[in-house]
Image (cartoon, rainbow, N blue to C red; front, side, top):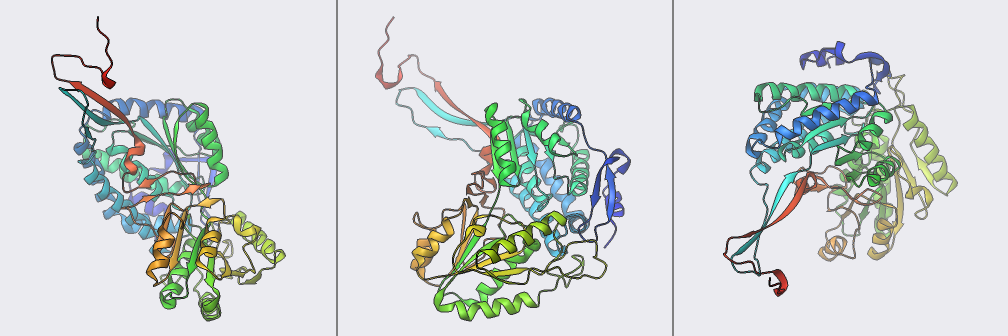
Length: 501
């Protein structure tokens, strides 16, 4: 793979505008520092919001299909530079290259979705009880949308938000994770290339990039000119964002902790289930919001599945994520490794038998934090299973009845994604019903990880309740107005009220 400086130059990035002494950018692949950046001050964040607000006042008047053309051009930029941007994701987030490329494809897919959406921002026509009257609803952009993204999907989550927000007529201010700022700089450069091709209908300041730490995020969240904050990250972070936004009655789209589960039922296709388990549990080294963390296996098939799962775990290729043979890359940093080891120790203290979980030796990656993914067999769902650890740990518990398995699935504070492997129609439909999974995503015969663009993405409870990406998630970036038009020559009142003058 090419080096990050070379890749960034290929996007047209002038790194002299970002260089400084504030923020070292380390690759989890080797631990080496690729660049050191300056961070924006809170005052600079405020100015960027001012510029974004001015841009919004012009952008909202551009017809939505024309706004969609900008996103189409951005999608073209992503197609052209997919391989290079995927490599930057791999360098900076540590994802295997296939997953890095897959993340860029998600960006392309949401651009395609948003372009079509730009001609489908539908309202309703509503029957009025009054003669000569018509009711309707219209949708208008909210203004400046603040996006705070996490390291594990350093560019796709911004694209989910920005593509929809922009076609809806908003401007966007993006504060990426301080662990992955270079991917954000690359993406911003590609977007500005699209703006240059689009022409003067795109006002200056339409898409702003903030490089910085939590202080910059706090400045964005606190600004009254930002009516909507979309934040992806930990539940702790989400609580802080929600509280700050509540103080000024701003809206939020929160995508927080996952702690996702899978049920493997007696009728499951075990070959298919095995593949679904392994990808969902170890993809992105267990650092996806939708990573499989809890596995409930029916007692009748437990002894058939677990040896096969252990054998698969024992042969997983761990190493340099740019190597096509690698399936498990590094953890993001030392803190993630330490959190994993602490969770495994707690699991042992709670009666768990741990398979794997140790440091993996990778030639050339001594400065990185590579691990063998861990399986933990527990006699029951214990306290550690109620906590999301962002690492490849899969807790495994036996169950006896579907009702018990569903109760275990729903017993944790988080509610993002869930799945069941079964060929029993009754079991599948029960899992998807009102008495089934309480998560925002519930799947049958696929794992909890790997969502498509067409569906709304998000979860319940401590996951935050927000929805991004497909379906009608676009409504979260707009305000609704109900309109009543009187085209008659009289003024009847609703509810038959009489008020004669």
